[in-house]
Length: 199
Ligand SMILES: NC(=O)CC[C@H](N)C(=O)O
Picture 1 (cartoon, helix red, strand yellow):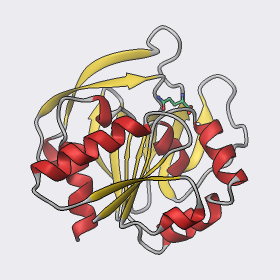
Picture 2 (cartoon, rainbow, N blue to C red):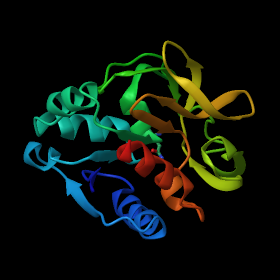
Picture 3 (tube, helix red, strand yellow):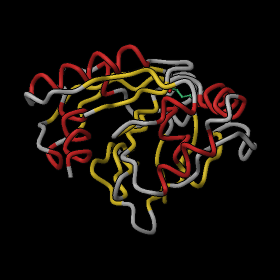
């Protein structure tokens, strides 16, 4: 199994480490690679990390990777998008402060996302979220300038909610979280993503 992590900006190293831990735990022989070029897209699954979605989108577009990646995802490539990665996947994106502003996105998932939802006062915080729907428990996770998934439509299904919004959503081969599973003590989100790749 070969898992790619989009590696322009953000928490890609943490994702690579967490993916390796999850592979070890599941006793699966796997390889994790950094994806930067179209030729790196020969993977069984890909992770789009947290960071700054505008930066990730602009660089991906400049590298000519955005369209080929979108095509692969539409053909069924499993994707885990976390935080900025969830923003990249969403069909509908706006910013809590400035509303709709165009930015390069993959735009394939039936979710409405509001960037920087928690505002300045709660830029970063830890919370216990319920990950029992994917075989975990109540897990402590971190939100960093996090977006919120405020609407789930079409084929997307909410897997976890925190307060009034969705924090983990799946739509077939797409998995989005607004928190950072790569910075968590549990590897359950990565284990679940690996199980999506195995299917
Ligand atoms: N930690 C993160 O990924 C933050 C996301 C960032 N606020 C954005 O809008 O892209």
